[in-house]
Length: 381
Image 1 (cartoon, rainbow, N blue to C red):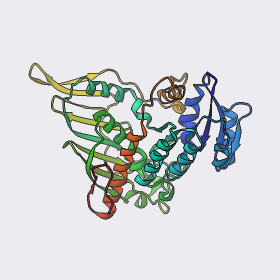
Image 2 (image 1 turned 90 degrees about the vertical axis):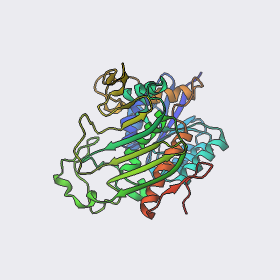
Image 3 (image 1 turned 60 degrees about the vertical axis):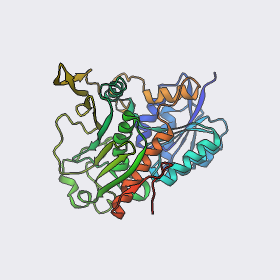
Image 4 (image 1 turned 180 degrees about the vertical axis):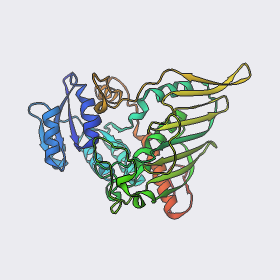
């Protein structure tokens, strides 16, 4: 089989920290041939570092998509643009890996699914936390029946002070929201996937626009991300700084979702600013708070706590020090493109995540729950 030709639309932070180094590990099977960004210097830098000698650089994604030789593209833009670019790419005959979240709204995500079905091309979403060691172990614990019937879960991604100040994260017009859509989406995706439950009855939630606008950002112990500076502009900060959601599933199970970039809450013991899952079932429960799976169950009729496996740090290619292990996200993606396996993150699963997040924002704005209809669509009235 000849090498697949891959293009990248968006050459900013997530491209350089995850997708470009991850796909560079697949050079035996792919050529990175096209790079597009509104800032030409970014695309030029990416092409120079990762591209083939004849790699092309664009500032208009339509020009990249017009190249019939390109087999697949990565859509790595702000959230609001995911739908438009993904639909155009699918209709141009490209397979698509779109960064999380799938889209900023239910309506946009639905258009992406329809385009996938209409074109017959593959569409997957960049939920890399599924591949982290503790989440893989947790899924196996669930699959092996240690928890029984899971009826309560918590999906949590809390940063006490961790506002991303690179890119456009605090601009609602480009991102669609703040920590709920940015990092809460990872915790929710993991939880739904571990439970294997995507049938929602209703959602109620609240987003808080408090600390991002009130705090003095220069003196808050702000965590630095991707080498950015340590403060944000609270005069232009127009997304939530924290959000909570209550999700009732049709089988009676409940998920409580919490996400924040800034909240006056002490970090929980073992917390490492990552997505955590807690699951409670009829036979036992587990959590991944400490970066390991902690199983609570019953042995010899005695309540027992067991640690399952060792702690293995989550891996994102661009953050690796020294020799990097193969990125599972990109390995699975390339295998699927070559017809050697299935997608690990399906667009249908990611669609449910977007519907829930969209419903939390709607519930907060209108102060009422959002019910889902028989077809699994939220009822916004």
